[in-house]
Length: 482
Image (tube, rainbow, N blue to C red; front, side, top):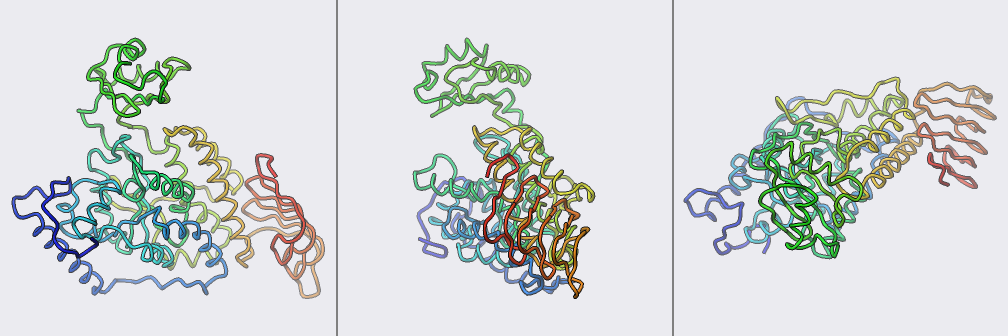
């Protein structure tokens, strides 16, 4: 049964309102109110509307938009689902969804209650391709491995943003917990989750499709979770069962309330300090055979000390930083698009301040970002090298798209010219973003043999045709790979 279907039997799921009135009547009334709210909002005049950006405004627009095609494919497949912004924005939505639910619960909510929570794949793609940054992508730190928003602070601040003038253009929301299949997953859901991980950077990086909403602060730990520790265990490793409690006590010391759950233990120490000491001791090499990870249940680690959030913030501004060297395209985006990054914690939604130095150059920036990702903490085993490679791949893609935009970036040229005053013959172009091209030119563009050294350390040595790599050549990665 889909949205708007007949009334199902009474239910007691966690999204059911707590009031005494008939829950289906409440939900029906709220759905009608949400639809009315959306219609009314659409009819209101928008003060100082931004001129619409179109693909014809600059050659670089379709090139950068094409970088979203991998994300488009994943939206079409349903691996990623986008929440309808109006579902969370509408007055009374707190009664409908008092606590954040994971994707499978929301899918069941749609099916059983006939409530449209997600955009259809077609509408999700349309929002991404709107050239208006209609999709909001939330970057934040999970508070616990079981639920990212234990206190409800994240959900409250996302709603506040959607109801704020800075969020009025948003029609769709990516929130990993609700947009991706969560554990326990079926085999089919595992495949969808795997597909989605390959485009995580694109969710935040899209120059025209997404607005990044950033929640830097981590909510304070609830007292009831003080001292809670999680031990992930290998299947058949000796700790996967209730009989391993004695071994855990021998390795970790005194704890209370031990619970064995599939694939893990949860235990509680008397104080937060005692829990920290136990985690540190257990993570020492070989200290707890059979355990794959030991960590505090409530994760209060700062935003920029976490690997995935460091990556998400970096790719959010990767294209924007390069626009400093392409002023024509940069001016268009500044004048015709809402801000790319919005802070949503603290006192309220506000445009994020620029964090990259204008004189840093792309090479030093790329190295700094990679170093920060490597220094950050990942809870997922093996995530760090994957994320570093995701960042490198995107940096290369956006660099190439900018270079082919038709706009000559700022820089200095030394070399030969033709009678028309165009670069032609041999010459060296040192771009302000740190890229250097040394080779042959024709009619103002690289053509023939040349070497292009990218600011991120990668090098192409080979043939060019009208500023594109074409013919024989070798591309060397910054890490030495070819």
